[in-house]
Image (tube, rainbow, N blue to C red; front, side, top):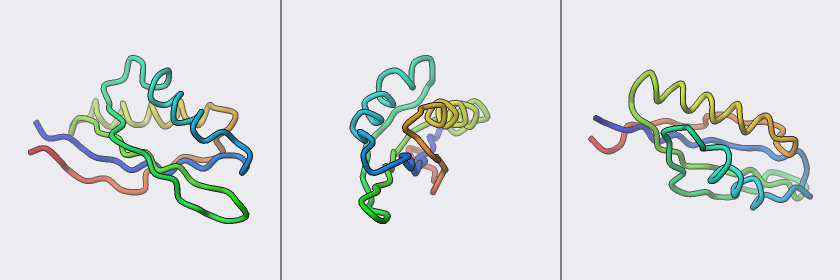
Length: 95
């Protein structure tokens, strides 16, 4: 079965937010019970000291994989430190 690589763009609420804390939570607490893997993260400058966090996430290429990604997005959005989260790109990997 193929997998899907999704790039999630996570926008913190302010430049003072602990971005590493968000990533740490995402890699531990937020993925519990979800069949996904965070492959890597990048930080991209936006404006006035604010950085977006790009999370590269691998899920199964199935309806369950889509639901898993949506659940992960919702968990990120529930964090007080996160203003917005959106899927920036999706592509098939691991044929």
